[in-house]
Amino acid sequence: MKQKDKSQKMQGEQGFDEYYRNIYKERWESLKNSLYGESDHKKFLIGENEPYFLDSGSIRCAVTLPLKGAKKILDLCAAPGGKTLILASCMDKDATLLSNERSSDRCARLKKVCDTCLPESIRQRVDVCCKDGAKMCLSNGEAFDRILLDAPCSSERHVLSSPKYLAEWSPSRIKTLSMAQWALLSSAYRMLVPGGYILYSTCALTDEENDKVIAKLLKKFGDAEIQMPEISSNVSSVCDTTLPEYEKTEFGAHILPDKANGAGPLYFCLIKKGEKSAE
Image (tube, rainbow, N blue to C red; front, side, top):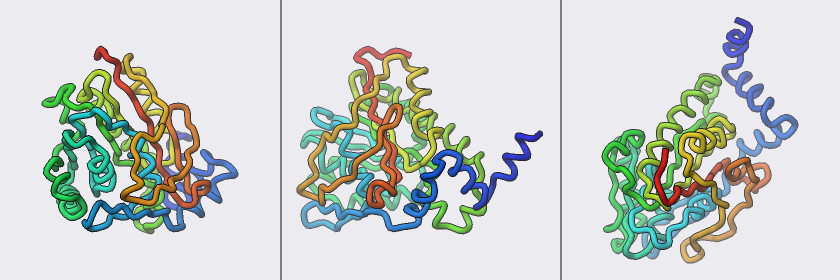
């Protein structure tokens, strides 16, 4: 009963502050203040098309996925489209990209971003679909060489900017999201060819949505291997390449705005599937 009462009290703005202060201790004040500030946005421009502005942490994340030699690439939760643009502009000229978004409204926005920001020579190799990523593995077993999963998450920066979302916040949201993230990641892993790579990312602050989701994958799939998050693609021709440094976590990397000039939050982890698929 005491634990239930504590959980009920840890809600709204006060509960939000207490929850994250317990995690980040004395760092929380500076981190919270940086979340209220402006993100470190960069202009991403491909040829003569419309520019797209996205957080430099998102760029640093996306260029971690090694695309050289990959023929079939999947962006599993692709809206609004910034990371799709990066993958599309960096993939080999004979590669194809499938960008998926479950929400029909967000999928429409994703399609518009692809139509307006990608040159036709690239756009014709990018397909956009509207499916439930957690179920796509049922019809796409070991179908993709590379997968980017930028999973729906707590997005604390957006929560803080919205009085409505902040008032509605509770720890149960984190648990619900982590379950959805696991469903997406396990689906993505089943769609990956042996020897392929998954890049998992969120803009969340908690281990429950980051390293602990990865830990579950490592426990479930014995052939999953954590890889170093090195930069694999050069985007100097389409954007400012001054990208933020990250902080190492148990399995991945975390870009936090209080120490990255406003970039992030952005967690990412690169995973390679063993040459022989095993569960």
